[in-house]
Amino acid sequence: MNWLIANESMIYILIMVIFLGFAVINKVPSVLHTPLMSHANAISGVVIIGAMIVMGQVEADNYLALGLGLLAVVTGMVNVVGGFAVTDRMLHMFKKKEAPKAEK
Image 1 (cartoon, rainbow, N blue to C red):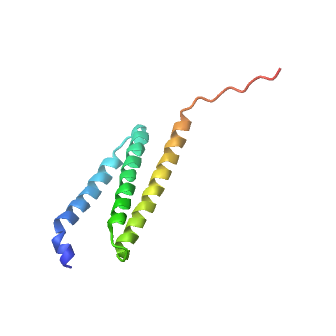
Image 2: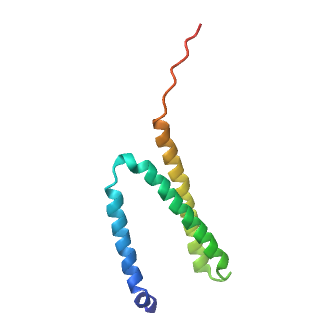
Image 3: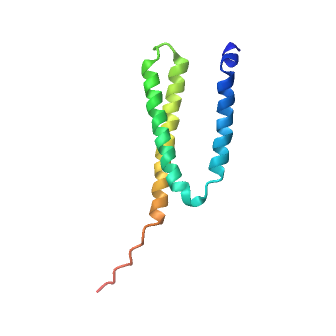
């Protein structure tokens, strides 16, 4: 309970950022989704690196921090791989299709 009281302002900021992020992303036109995915991949990459740094500095018996770090790394990797897969699929939609070669 003391932790909640000590970090009350940070919790309010986190809640506001979640709602603000949802409102901003919800208004993005479809044309901008590919660049937005690229930025989301970059942010997830930073999360992965940060989680690995934190996991490297945590005591070996702090299972909560290690578990949360592992969860951050795994979900960040899923987000990065999925983001690149979706971006690649979207970019393939804009490639010109080759005409079939006529046989002699």
